[in-house]
Length: 172
Image (cartoon, rainbow, N blue to C red; front, side):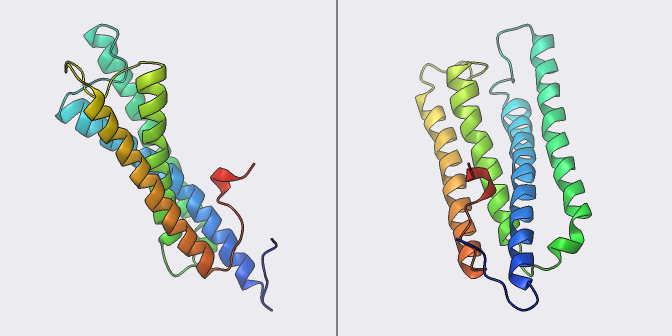
């Protein structure tokens, strides 16, 4: 369906700002969850490294590369927030950003849990346990909760702004 316009085109501006903020939020979410994974699971709990099938040097080196990626995503998103601040000033709420952050966090965790943990077997959620299933279920369950919460938030934004477009991450 087409977006409805009022005399000033405000609805179109709000729709564009919401989609822009959603995309920025996705990048922020990826950077944030990557940093949290690195800090909590890799460093504090020391459950795993990014790539576990190597020497200690390369395990830590791969963690460093992962940290650079996470920080880069976060920095890119922050710079986008700054550069798009005039467009985004048309919004009076941050629900689009929050939805994007949740989409980014959940999507990245689901990718990590399915692709990196199971298919590529780069690392398990927790090394050295006899039964990894509870950790896998909790990790992927959290990802699904984050995605679902982001989806419900985004649906509220769409309904409020009278947008009928699908989120940019789901467009074909």
